[in-house]
Image 1 (cartoon, one colour):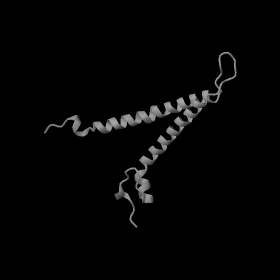
Image 2 (tube, helix red, strand yellow):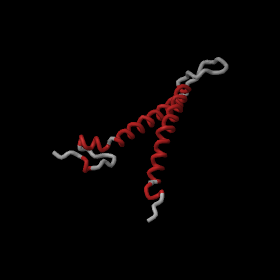
Image 3 (spheres, one colour):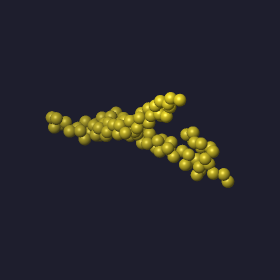
Image 4 (cartoon, helix red, strand yellow):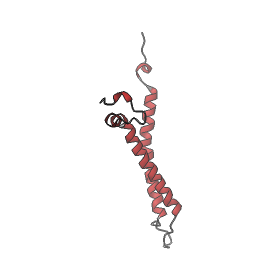
Length: 106
């Protein structure tokens, strides 16, 4: 009986872990940095080259807060997804695909 690398290595799980770790480790901090940059330009604190007073850009300011809201909601969703079975076990509320067999019986 010949066993190869694919018998014990789950390629799909490895790619999922790689993708989501790149998203959490690079994309969310990058979006946060972009939001900071847009906010600094949006509120008018950006120093101009000719010494004129800075101009406010309300669209950039609002866009920065939309980006911040997305980053915060992604973090909250991730924490809830990781803790879904724990929360379901202690509250009895099954959400995000929590396993109903891990709940306490009263």
